[in-house]
Image (cartoon, rainbow, N blue to C red; front, side, top):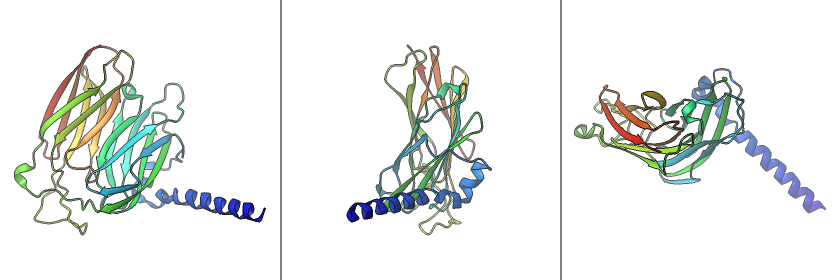
Length: 258
């Protein structure tokens, strides 16, 4: 009986400590600013990362929504934060009603072991939040190659996972070659002699209608990769437009056929 009582006390302490740890996002200015006074729901948003990242320069990350929404409500925005990085913003994603199934994947930079935060805002101004602790073995350092000749977007690629069907979620995977030079060095400070050069955004349109967009920050890995879902209602064409912070644009297209 004593052992069982001690075990119960230990589990209660462990659960309490975990719950407290999960509230660390409340101390992060960037996260609280994004919430803008909203009280987030702590269940329904799933953030997937490895428990241990051997290489912090490219860490696989996925966000999925498994909660309940009101009729007509959909996720409008998903934001990613890595508060342990020199700059906490990682990426922002804007979704339309054509991307009602939230299943986003990307690769991120983590400069140290930390708690990563995902925040989702719905069309009814509700907020959902999820966190995940990651131990980083080798720091991502948040640096690029420093080679100015390579600071251009090249070789955009797009592919569908499976066959498109009317009214059914279709997974889109896209990638573009770019070093994502942050202008930061291992000490986290800006290097005056190195200019920041980032891919700034990705915009996806289906038959001319915007269905998904991304805003990238220094926490996005080199050669930006994004996976998202669309729900096509008719055949046509998916156009992806990448833009860097200098305003240069690269486009690629993929036919959508049932």
